[in-house]
Amino acid sequence: MQESTAQALSTTVGRRSFLKMAAVAGAFGATSGFASEKVTRAATEEEVKDPFPGSKKVKTICTSCSVGCGVIAEVHNGVWVRQEVAQDHPISLGGHCCKGADMIDMVRSEVRLKYPMVKENGQWKRLSWDDALNRIATKLADLKKKDGADAVQFLGSAKMSNEQAYYFRKFAAFFGTNNIDHQARI
Image (tube, rainbow, N blue to C red; front, side, top):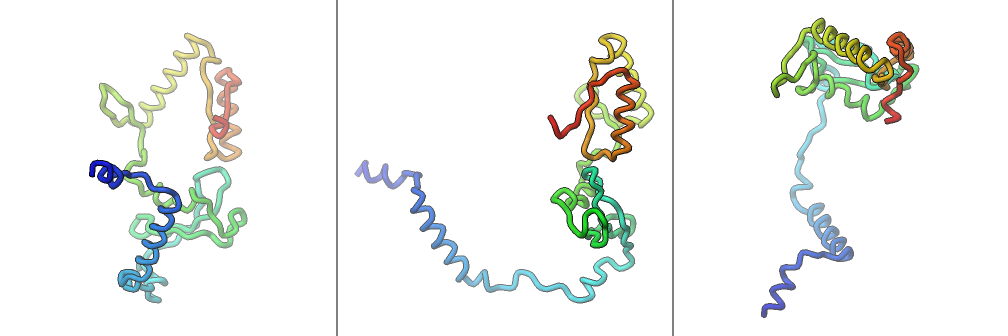
């Protein structure tokens, strides 16, 4: 009796048994009444044509990387509500990568950093832009004075345009270091 109880409680399932159970579950799900119910409906012509009455379509550029694909943002009452691919854009040619397709969610995210912050005494505190830049400049100057310019590394980003990368490199050179790299290599 003890032996059969131990076998019944075994949680190991062989590959073949798993596939058989998955096939049975799939067949059951496909033939059950739930699958035949109308869970969704087709959008009406009016909903497709103008889901946000009075909204404005704005052609813009995706900033997820430096490629610069085209995005058409639909803005309603100052809020980005929908996006489309710019079919006539010379770079993206009507396509998007997964990051570009998610631009609206990144912009509308509640956890997106929108202003400079510093952690003091275990709590995040908002700073003004001037205060944040002054703190960074002071720390860079102190570090350069104490340990030399090569104690700093400047790290570029795929979000930079060619022009931004050029000025970023010039800034590092003016600072006195050749320690510059790109985030994709790390």
